[in-house]
Each structure stands twice: as structure tokens, then as C-alpha cells.
Image (cartoon, rainbow, N blue to C red; front, side, top):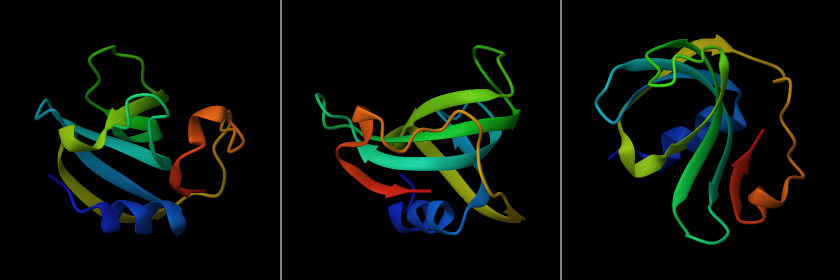
Length: 100
């Protein structure tokens, strides 16, 4: 399991990250929000995937990842400013831990 503090740092500083999700392959993502799902309580991250493996093959695009399924996370030195389509006022973020 990954360090949640690293993930919070990436969101706070708007850093691009690389993750290995479900041990299926490396993905490059722009992390937007870390939160507990309102009904299940699962720790999730919403991110915009720009490159890498995708089961749906829909890259680029918005993805939701279960934090306990991220096996590896590395911060890059690439930064971003905004992400089109992100709504920090969404009801899904009522239990937000970190947001851009």
C-alpha cells in the first residue's frame, strides 16, 4: 500500500504522479482529489490519466482509483495548473481529505 502523505503532497502541490494500479501497469495521472466515498467509506482518488496502461483504453480521461489498489506511487517533477472537467464542489467530495 502507498503512503497517503505522498498522495496528499502531490495534490497540494499539483504534481503529476506515476502509479501502478492493481499491478497492471504504470499510469501517469494528474491527481485532483483524495476522499472517502460518501456511502462505502473507501479511500479514493480522482485523477486525470494522461498516459500509460488503462483497462478501458480510454486515455486521456478521468479515472477513479481505490487507494488500497495502488501498489506503487512516484512523484514526478512535472506540475500542472488546472484540469478541465474538475468540480471541487461535487457532492462526492463531501469527505475530501485533499483537493486541488
